[in-house]
Length: 153
Picture 1 (spheres, rainbow, N blue to C red):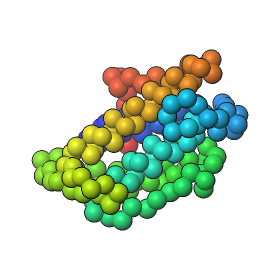
Picture 2: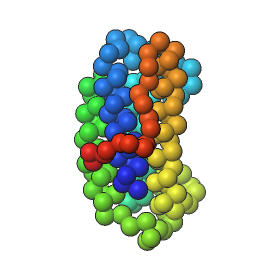
Picture 3: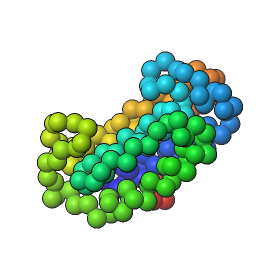
Picture 4: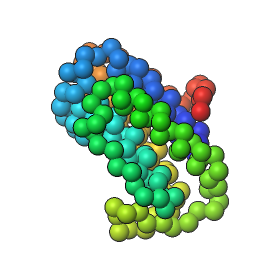
């Protein structure tokens, strides 16, 4: 599981770096699809990942609000800061000891593995949206191949 999270984090970091070429107004411009803007989509990916991880650990959800993260630098720092906690959980997580859990914002029960796979797919979905928006801006998107990558996490 850690390899797929590492893949997502690597691609996310590349997107954050890619975003540094855009003017701040372009990062905040409302786009079709997704959760609004490029910056808000990156924030959303980070917030959802963190909330689900805390949820499957039975920990209280620490909600972050986009209004507090209106710059690329703040979103990048949030991603980096929360990643360590998530990484520590994933290093010790054993997929074979899967259990069913509930989270505070949803009545349904899910297995921990199901949630972890959802988090991975969720980010990949939004990375696809960023790729479409990049092309709409006349720019090449980040290469998202899994094959041939080395992960630093």
